[in-house]
Amino acid sequence: MEIWTKLTAWFDSTHLHEQIKDVDYIALFTNPWFIIPFGLMVGYMFFKQNWKDLIITVILIAVWWISGTAYMNSLLVNGEIQIEKILPVIFGGAAALGVVVYLLFGRSD
Image (tube, rainbow, N blue to C red; front, side, top):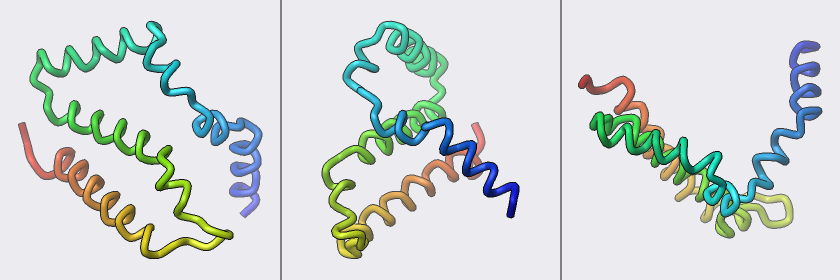
């Protein structure tokens, strides 16, 4: 249990959660130091017809985008989870996870 306490204290000291939460995605996608390597990676995936990795990349970007929407901010009201709003998120996440697991383990190229 002491290891867990030290690990969470270290994670809190990095302020990684706040950095991820406060990402300025407009500035990120207009920054040439990010968009050029990202565009080259996506172009290379198209060139090599690496659909599996391209689909996983699109799913990760979609999850990141969806996590910042107003809908996600409305899931908690007065510290309580709104069950009618969280169920679509759970099923959507399960479907996305199922697609990723299928792409990684279910089929061969």
